[in-house]
Length: 269
Image (tube, rainbow, N blue to C red; front, side, top):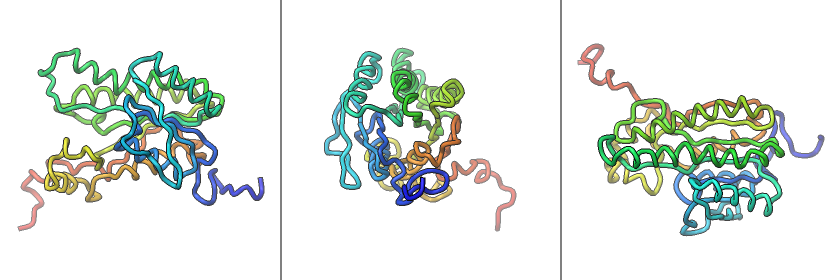
């Protein structure tokens, strides 16, 4: 329609690609999730965060703040209550971002199978539970699901093997959902590399450790939550209306192969 601010390929000319949309972001109260939430707010969306605990301070951007609803995503009944509350409050749902997840460092021989199974539950079964509960609303809005995956699902992950296995399963789940739920609902995965958040020290150590790890990334730095948010906004927007079943790598170029530094051939001097 003329004069509505649209540009070819979908979206708004002023960059508010998600104007009028409603998004639920799981685990959106801090870290990567909060970064995604801020990007969605800046793009014009109404954002609902869910987690077991509320944010320490409002997650806000563009002069607006996200709302918060408590939920344990491992509890199917709690997830259904969450989506019912979103429906009552907003009357629609355009995007579900399955971001909640994570794991401590734990070698496989430590902790026992039950503890590792809880990692799989949080990182694979909970996103499936949330997606199934959201499906009727997403189908009505012809919306989308964005899974937040990890490079740990595509390479060996010593110390976080259960997490890597869950993220590999999540990517496959997204591809299967994309086929089953087409054409009404698009489903895609962000495959993340290393991200600088307030918890980066738990994974990479002090400032010197973070800098050393960042130097291994071809682009020379860790991702910021806003980098992830920008990619998530794209996948949720009309500019990605023909993108489904895709895995978008957000990893700064990946990892330099170790053999290149170990080999003695082709070295100067």
